[in-house]
Length: 491
Image 1 (tube, rainbow, N blue to C red):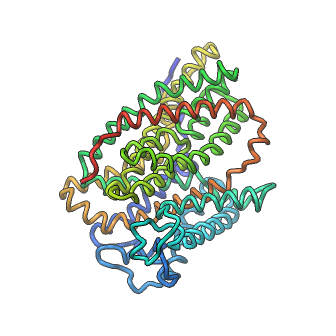
Image 2: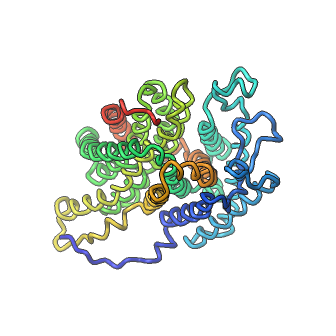
C-alpha cells in the first residue's frame, strides 16, 4: 500500500549536502549574474593562465578576461588569498550547519585548497598540457597534450599517490574531512548549468535535440541495465536479493547515490551500501582514466556520442562529469573539432543528470516492490513523498541556472544574450565550476584506497560488478552511437 503522509523534516534544507550544493551553487551564480550588465561582483577571483610559460604571467584575475577588463590593477596573489577566504567562509558555514567540526573542516579545506590550487598552477605549465595547435604561439615543439581539462587527471594522480603511498595505512582525519567529493561535484554541476545555458543560446535547436535524445537514452538504459545487472548478480554469482538489488542500482543507475538510495528503500543493512559504494568508487577511477581516451580515439567522428557514452557508462557524478570534461578536451583539441568544445562535456553531464533525476523514482519503485512482493510484510506502508526525499536536490540548481539564462535570452534575443553572458557571466561561474571540479578530482584520489579491495573481502561482488559494468559499457556505447552519431556540429 502507498500512502501520501509522512512529515517533512525542514531541517534538511540546511543539514543535507545536496541542499548545500544547491545553495552555494546558486549563491555564486546570482553573484555572477550582474556581469551581464558589466558589474563583476566576483571578477576578483584568480585563474591559472593555462598553458603558461612565464611564471610571472601564470595567474590572471578573471575580471580582466571579461568584456570590460575589470580589476586590472589587482595583484594575482591577493586574488588567490581573497578566493581562498571566500570559499573557506561559505563552505565552513555550510559544514557547521551540517554538524561538522568547524575547526577540523577549516583545516581540511585549507589543505585541499593548497594542494588543488598549487598543483593546478604547477601542471598549468605548458609542457604538461598544451595541445598541438598551441605550440606555435608558445614557441614549443612538444608537450603532454591533455589540454586544460586534462590537468584534472594530474590532480587525481596526485591524490592517489598521497592516499596510497604517503598515507598508506590511514588517511589523516583532517584530509578525510576536507575531501568532500560528492559535495564539490554537485556544486560544480549546479554551476555547469550556467555554462550550458549560456552556450546553448546560440544553438537552440541543437540543445533541444540533445535533451530529447538524452531522455530517450536514459529511459532505454533503465529498461535494459538494471534487469541485466540484477540477473547477473543473482543467477551467475548467487548474491542474495538485497546485495543484488543494491549492486544493480549502483552499476546501472548512477553509482554511490543510487546504491545508498536503493539500500534505504529495501531496508538493506549498512554493510551492503558501504561495500558496494567502495567498489563503485574504485572502478569509477579506472573508468575515468581509461574511457575518455578510448572515446577520443574511436568516437572522434561522433563527438556527441562520445559525451553521451561517458554519461551513460561512467559511475558516480564526479567521475562521469570529469570523464565528459576530459573527453571534451581530448576531442576538441583535434584538428577540425574545436567547435565541439563544451558540447561533449555538456552531453555527458546532461545524460548523467537525467540519470540522477530518476534515482528517487527508482528507489520508490523498489521500495514498493520490496514491501508488496519480496518481503510481503502485512500492513507495511510506503509514503509516496519518498520520491521527493530521494530526488537529488542539486539537479534543481543545474536546471534552474540553465533556465534562468534561457529566460533572459528569450526576452532580449538569444544572440545578444549569448554575447553578454559569455563575456560577463560565465567567466566568473566557469572559474568556480572548474575549481570545484578540481577539488573533486583531488578528493577522488585522496579517498580511493586500492587496499580496500582486499579489506572488504568482496571477491564475488567485485567480479559481479565488473561483469555487469562491462556489459553496460558496451550497451551504452551502442546506445550513444545509435542516438547521437550523425548530429550536425554547432554552427
